Amino acid sequence: MGFGALIIGDEIIRGKRQDKHFAKLIELLAARGLTLDWVTYVGDKREFLAETLRRTLASSDIVFSFGGIGATPDDHTRQAAGMAAGVELGLHPEAAAEIRAKYGEQINLNRLKLAEFPTGSRIIPNPVNRVPGFSFADHHFVPGFPQMAWPMVEWVLDHYYRDRFNRSIEAETSIVVWEGNEGVLIDLMQRIEIDYSGIKVFSLPSFGDDKIRRHLELGVRGDPAQVGPAMTEIRAAVAALALEFEER
Image (spheres, helix red, strand yellow):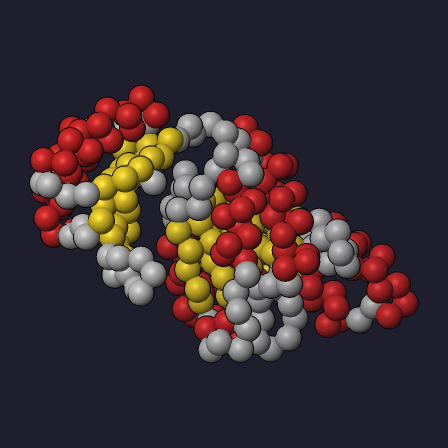
């Protein structure tokens, strides 16, 4: 089971607003010893969103979906989730109770639509305005507003996935190779990944500027027991290529 994110909305796809959820979700997961495996940005197209959700629901991933759960014509997430799951939308009693409590005598049918979730959903409490999000299987749907979405994501993580916290122990280390060329190092990188199955090799090149010369960061992450020996081999191989390097 990995962690994924769906970030929804034409306003993000068209550049009218800048996404903040991606970086924040990484932060919230990292605080619990978890990592994000993928992110997908989707516009306000119901059929395309439904197809995306069909694919992610068929996986074993835990997915956080941000945006599109309102009741205006450009909100399609609730309907798309129902389509993807093959279930009808229905008035969720707990969500309806929260919304009735919020609006009191000002309640109307449009506001109650905010409580229509795919059948079988569970509510996600909203500490800001009491209009809930919802969970269906391991997919969790929250508003696009950061001040609401982020505490709701934290509630989901702490409520459903506490047993996964800090379960994956990972180490990372790297060197800076000055004037390094990835093409020269590919064979080394491939060999290291074959010899050390518990790690991943990474290379982050930089073309440099007037303040710092061209370089690349070369390193490994993964099984702490393998990181040290793998980097020892990398340092030796880089030195044998007569390339200058220093510790990151």
